[in-house]
View 1 (cartoon, rainbow, N blue to C red):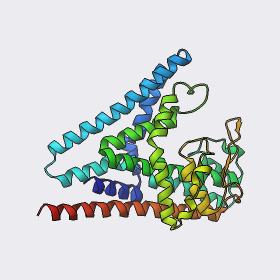
View 2 (view 1 turned 90 degrees about the horizontal axis):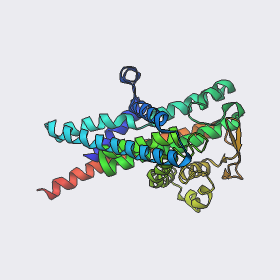
View 3 (view 1 turned 90 degrees about the vertical axis):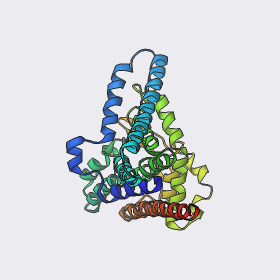
Length: 323
């Protein structure tokens, strides 16, 4: 049932995303989590560096545990109230649906690509600023395309493969706990004056939670292209990235498209000297961004197919061994 649950959830997200009507009426679970994190951060992110480190760490652990326990509570109540496993499966799928982000990611990248195709750099900058933290005013068309492809590759792991991984491993509690960790990192996991200490534990939790999914994402991208040579010595290149995980899907995508990614960029007024990934390759053009979207789409369809196949294989083996 777990395979079927997440197959349905991913299919719903892939086809529909989170409907605007639901967003207006009940908002979104990640927004609920974000408001909780913001409230707690404002109350606790004070004091000495050590105090902020301890309080931020305890807050991150407490919120993650609360999300996990809430998932257990929902699962237990649902199994006690539902009249069949099919109902449990469908309801669980609807609950997991908003915790995946394939449709929204594809929409964001498309919103960046379309203005680029008409040389409308201003609207492309506005669109890319919705998904990356770097200063969009410093980005030329090459920089915008790199930012878009990097975000697409990294969020394939963070927004799809990692939630599925923890959901398959630990059920609804697992995917809920992961999304809390990921939201914590996206809100307070920064190395700036405000969050360097308060968000340190949240950032480390996110690193641990994404360690396997990031590498799994690289492998799945290789499957999609049927070229496993792109994974050769990938660790040497991926480890140049500032993140212990993001370099894996980004390096894989850079090799698939034969482009360079990452490199120096500006956050606010601060310039960073990040290493290049696949440095000797050229910058991406619009065709590369379009191809990245096609490969991303192929990976999502592969995951849906694998999940349904695993569900059918389980049912088939169950029918054989119980008769």
